[in-house]
Image (cartoon, rainbow, N blue to C red; front, side, top):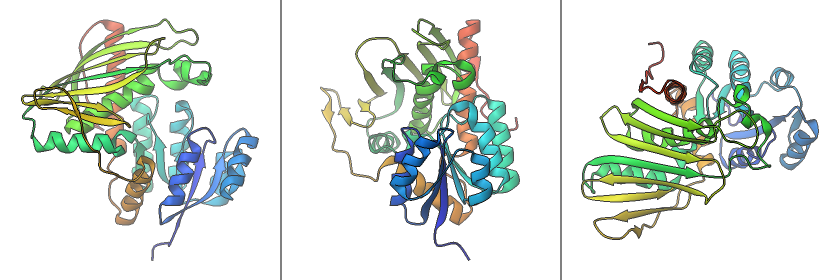
Amino acid sequence: MQKAELRVAVLGAGIIAKAHFDAIQSTTGFAACAVVDINLDKANEIAQLYEITAYNDYREMIKQECPDVVVIALPHYLHKETAVFAAEHGCHLMLEKPMALSVSECDEIIQAGRKADIRILVGHTQHYIAENIQAKRIIQSEELGKLVMIHDVRHTNYFQDSRPQWFLEKEKSGGGILANLGTHSIDKIQWLTDRTVRKLRSSVSYHGSRGNVEGSGMIYLELTSGIPATIVQSGYLGASRNETEIMFTGGMLKLVTGESLWISRGGQYEKLDTPNTAAPFELQYSDLLTAIRDHSETSCSPAYARGVIAALEAVYRSAETGLEQFVDQEFGS
């Protein structure tokens, strides 16, 4: 007999923690039980808001609380360690992206999850945003003809003072703007098209005001169907921008993720009305709950998320060597 409510604990009391707890509260079938942070004061603040227990040691929390689900909202270099420990204690996982620092770390998480027979959802939020969902429906309908190419642009002040230092240390973050925001773009392009990256070429720059990570990058990639796409990102000073142009034989889409979707059938762009959906985090938790109850795979599986990291590793290899790189996204291959 299934539990009426599954108990959920969150590792990390940073900015994103409240979004997780609000989504947990909004999802019938889940109930928050604990929060963990090495800064116990931060954990206590969250604990008081949601009337749960605060801890500063995730191992102690898992052993004491025995949560059904563990949410990992920690710096990237802690993902593998905490995910494997939680899986070994039978906890299902809501794991923030990027999944881990490397393909080999992703493989360790996948193996631990299979051994424990738990469900894992990796939080690639692009799959759950209303404008993206609407854009994908239009692509699949072929109402604008055949898809021919995609151009994705992201500009932001990546080295702003408010960004925690660990983001700018490659050994902790896995990389700079491309590891953090570039993985969103790779994921978005793959998910929108139902295709994976086959090969790519990239160039990056290192002119950040602090840290040892790249501050910009340009990627030319080819999907498994042969469709080309470009990703252009700058983390230096300038005008902020987050747009994806999707070009077809009979028109174009301009996707401003989280804000709007525009369509051209040969003339100027016209704004589309976007259907209301639940908040992205709520959709993620509903997805995980269904997978747990049905003993099925989540729609953002660890095998898929591993493929995003495989593409990211190829981006850095290409930047270092100046050569085109092929991407092998298959687990166990």
